[in-house]
Image (cartoon, rainbow, N blue to C red; front, top):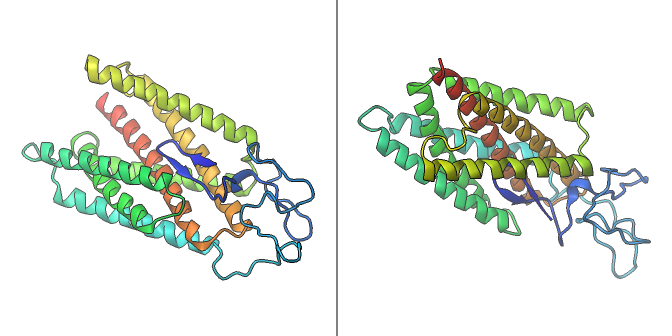
Length: 298
């Protein structure tokens, strides 16, 4: 199945419609990974490896597979390196957009138009990758580049015209959420199970639906639509958006952990980088929005 995050749907670590995030395939010695169970996977009696989307039976002898060799398997180092590369491209293009696309009175319309165009291209690239069976580094890095241009322009507008230092505050807030969720996940304070997954998906769908309705009212009625993205109500929805982003970070961490445990192919580390980047961009934008609202109401 495909996993989702608050921005775009994306394909998780999967083979033959399996989802590694909540499976119960045992490791050597009988220990189970992700013992909460996958509500979308049907276990097959007599086959302890049926729920591992990466395990393959020895068809000739009917024996369970030997311990996977490390060559070609995803590791945490692969995830860190590819995530760093993706975020690095995004940061570099954001910095270039900030420097080369001024947002003074004479140039703001042109710069904002370029930023919106880059955002639309990035959205298309992200959707294409989401529906591809395999990760495409070129698509993922291209998405990061165009998304960086959009974020650079948007951050420059907020930082230079609304709230001085807003971009750095949003970056620090995003880093704090990432670190906090990582610590909470590793300490076991966040349990990513079937109930957690269902709750986050339902909350995210409701949130996106409300934002879409608000956008429609804003387009056809003018102003800020129903007011979900401005004033005190906008701050509340911004906080909810950050909390949803934190929940999706936990889902991302679970996918990475299970993908490594099941011996996912190394190239799927790009999917981890893609998902983490989408989630971090979501959280950053919510922080930036809250900072803008707080300062515009002064």
